[in-house]
Length: 255
Ligand SMILES: O=C(O)CCC(=O)C(=O)O
Image (cartoon, rainbow, N blue to C red; front, side, top):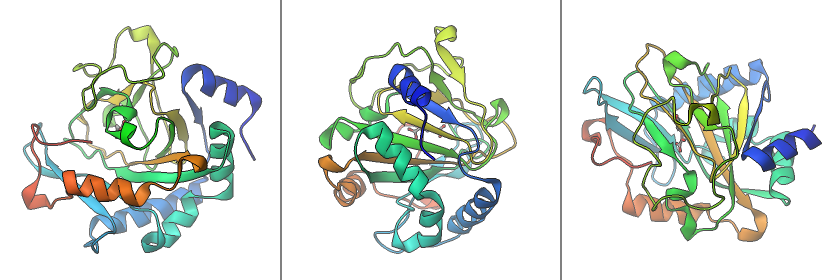
């Protein structure tokens, strides 16, 4: 049920691996319906955190992501995603048991802005520790027309911060350059990508007609502690969730 020797080696060399069909289709149908349910839910304090932004393409106020979805407040979704298989693979990659650090669903609705080429660690994570692994889970098909992600595929990046915190590595949309160092990740529901916090990746604006929902679950080593409550306490103080009427604009959003 775990990852093979070859998969572990690829992760070490490139900083990520894609595993097709990691979650089965029936599970993903349930996940998709539960995520749809969250869109209309008014979150209780301390539970889901919704972020709305004004689309740079259409000017519409769009739901961009919901954070802090997993936990007792969404037990069914949590059980579907944090399975023994998931946790075993993460332990293999981290070399010890994994603890959830943060989680989110990115909605990437038609009109959503780009996610510029970046390293995740640049989003203020150094304050917590220097080693994280994120599990990206495709809820919808990820294709070129609905802003599929591109990842550096050459392993040619530093395993530390390559920019100042909060700064992207490039202002360009994909194809990132040099082009032969990046790969477009075409994914179907249930396909996953395990990636470290330093591998450069990003996605273009969604100029298509289809939404592209992906989960991003980030884990740290158990020996670094359980930091999720502190992370969200800090984050919401500096960057509070908002409402559609109060959508952030291009100048004021952060990941
Ligand atoms: O959803 C995307 O396309 C970008 C995800 C990502 O890289 C992030 O949120 O840090």
